[in-house]
Length: 162
Image (tube, rainbow, N blue to C red; front, top):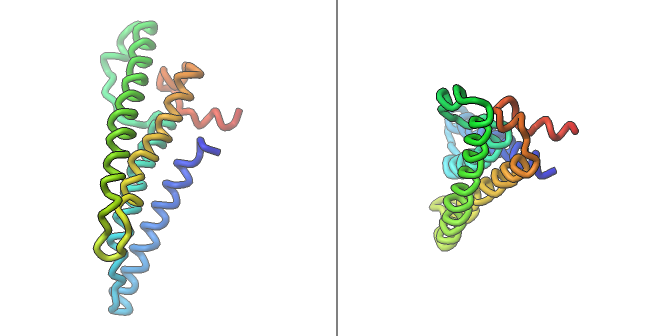
């Protein structure tokens, strides 16, 4: 299901990083023969983990915000400001991460990594993909007008059980 795709990709990327680094540490210190490409692969997986993590943070409503004064407002104003915040995040995500991220990924098509010879588009495409997943989560929240999410009581993970 699309709502859990970011979680699966994040787990895969983090697991890959842990396995690669662990194997390389073993090879370096026990076998005295390090694997040369693990740093490059781990960095690529870390980039994927970061941008897919944006989507997961949006889904679980766990992104950082300073809302001390906003929470002091009466509930109707608080709800309006929270809706405005979600729409603003949606617009910024579309423009910055999807539009510019896609251009960034396309510009990386001609470049390759030094050791693996991997096209940078494979790494850079994480920006628009993670952003697209975040937009899907934001659209679900706005379309359903999820009051609990807007009031920052929970994330949309509870939708999966419905």
